[in-house]
Image (cartoon, rainbow, N blue to C red; front, side, top):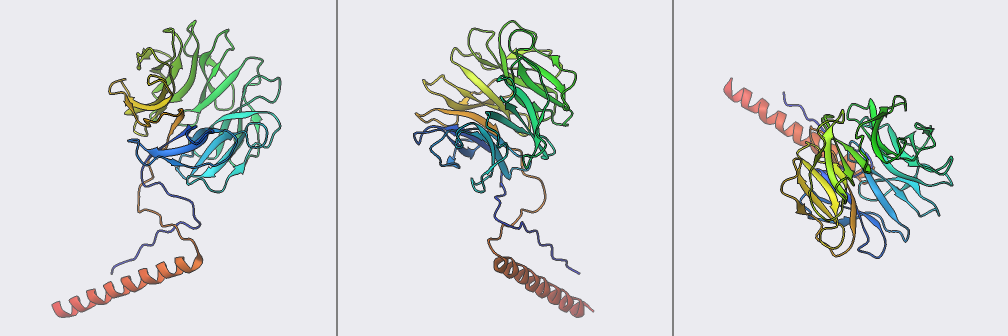
Length: 324
């Protein structure tokens, strides 16, 4: 007997066919969120607002993007579907909230909030905006969280020890540890997909470069090695590449390189300022989901699938009778 499997996705949420890179660009006169294929093709604008939209962060399943926006008169964390629809304000607070990042399970978002003493703190909340909790709660400046792939830790930048360093703490906010321990500023950590390494931005060579280190802080290596400013690393889902922003062409562009620093390539190649890359995860395995715009379209698809299945079963029965 032949069974018919119908995989459907209710609603109009976009399902990524492959990994994408989201980024910000001012090519349309103000800073908006864009996305593109990982080779730089198919650059598409997602937001369209007179205020700044920046710092995109993909949900683990690739269906949503969290970002920071000034459209309410202060910076708030918003979330939207991957096609730019269904924008929702999550934080709803009069202070500034920036740099969102999703938990690996997709049930929480960590972010930087400036709501207590005016300095940055690492907060977390549920993905509907509820349960907003201060994790760091320290007089130092804490910013730019990134979750470990297993969800047990959060890396972030902090000047708790006098200059900006990369710290790691338990996901609940306890036991912060200084990983970089360098006199120069270290910023913008990004955890590798396998959890063994952390990429970050460092000013230790007199300009900003992309570095990486083991997750315990050892083996710190300069990857970019360029006189221009390089910032904001993000890993490919398989950990083989790192995208980042670079000023080496006289304006900020999104570049990609191998994880060892080789083959640095300009992806955006645009005269505007392109920044804040964020690499989406690979789509989950299994048959592709099919989006339906209405119940009628869904019913039509199901009936067609059943008719095809019935026809296949009749053909199989006829073949059995002929063999018998």
